[in-house]
Image 1: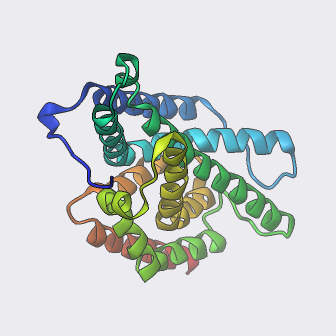
Image 2: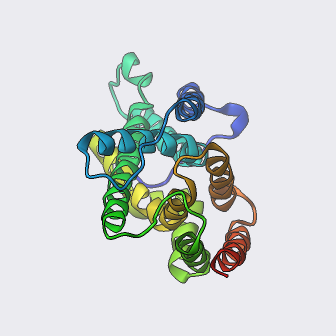
Length: 252
């Protein structure tokens, strides 16, 4: 059943409160871990560097994406909890594991961004092998990348993906899957929507400073405001204009 019962914040179910606190704790721990880590520079055909890059990238995505993911996780958890209550003969123990589908949803979501990080690493490595100064440079290449990032913010593709990210209920209604395996598949599915919305921003982040804490903070605020702010589409275009201006300044 796709109709969901969303409880008021004042009656937040205990499993949901626990899961939200867990997400925020993991996000905080991820920020601390990234702060103490040294991101390997992409551009080397080295399996160890690829593994380290992908691992730290995944942690960085946890830090940046989890705060904006809470509404969707809340929806999945409440739905699972309601289904358990509606089932006959459900055990007390199962009543306390209503957060399992949401946990699998999060794992599927993180898996998508980890895959994206691997693709980014390999793409940047290929460009570096061809002689392009693709990371840590604020020259022409960075200017072009930031300018293209700004253009993408105005594209219909970006705006459609953003609207789906801003409306978890419509995603649930259209793409709901039952069961634990269905929750994991939904996490992957939602992660795909999120990458359509944010992958260019991540490319810009990698170009001008991979996993730089100040830049990660700025990009995290942008993503959060786009997804959850009352004027998300307008914020997206305002950010796009800022990227266009910055890109032009770097190019000239």
